[in-house]
Length: 126
Image (cartoon, rainbow, N blue to C red; front, side, top):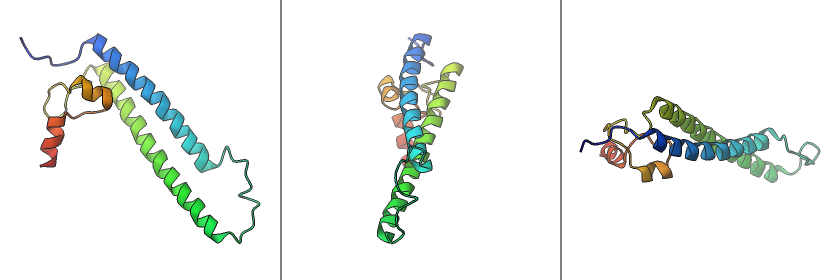
């Protein structure tokens, strides 16, 4: 029996559902981070509080930097998920870009935007 070169349309639909669910959650989280950074939900007193709280200012800045990093990471995840949806449309989803073999379903369920098999990732390390 010949080795499969791509996932069936039914399998691709299963992965599409997984990706859409993750994408919805990721976009919700990204919007939360964005709102925190832009202080949209802010109903606090940051703009009216006394300026003598220098140490607290440093903590606020650090917190905002961390939130910015988290937002950037979330945006990259969203972009990777959208790219995976394009690969589903092209019917190239789940094919390792190094080995050309199918990435195991278990890996794709865990990391739906994966483009490399474990075998290829290990080759890259060495």
